[in-house]
Length: 270
Image (cartoon, rainbow, N blue to C red; front, side):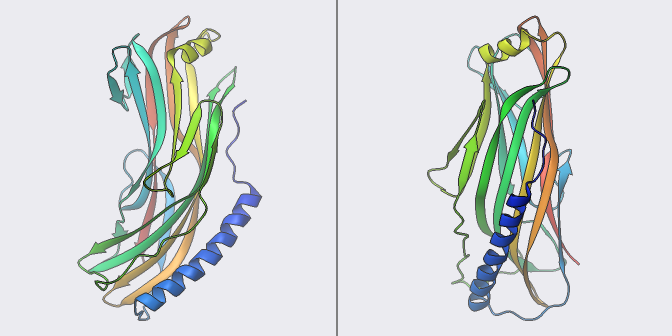
């Protein structure tokens, strides 16, 4: 049975507590390192799904499907593909930090991010099948984004010391990056033997759904000619992020169709 996508109350409370503690530490470190002038206004964040790249996004998560053939070649995000030579399919989330702030004039913004997310995967339809899930907690990133204005030359961007955690089941695997220990990697993989074992018990097209449950905490310090705004925002998204259809004749895979969304976080000064 495919698990439904929902944020647990316990996780929400933990995220809120961590957010309050972190933003306090973040604000203190920023206030001591960069002189702040009062500035009226506010910052608005929104996290949602887009059909393509999120416009004016600070951060986005995309979902990459990589298809490998018998001869060892591969193709990425093929859309619709007709082939009997598919040997393996892999699905993985990918983080991109653009730092695109919708603010007028010259500015710079210091960001700290902490992401928690779960991706649930399964066959939908008359005969449902659990194909596993991945749970990633405290995948963090800190960076500076600028447009014509820069902080003092000796400024150091503070980082979040959140304990990174991850777990995965069935066809998901996950690991912690060796070079950047706070960047957590995950991937869903099925080879042709595993695919055929599913197709053998199916009469129609096999529909696989990827559902995302995500919480993003963003800490920011936005500086313009008028002064500085600093604070935090916690945004959530629960819903589909990709679908994969497998076309077959008996247990023979003959093609597939892949569709995905971009989950983007936008930031606007108002």
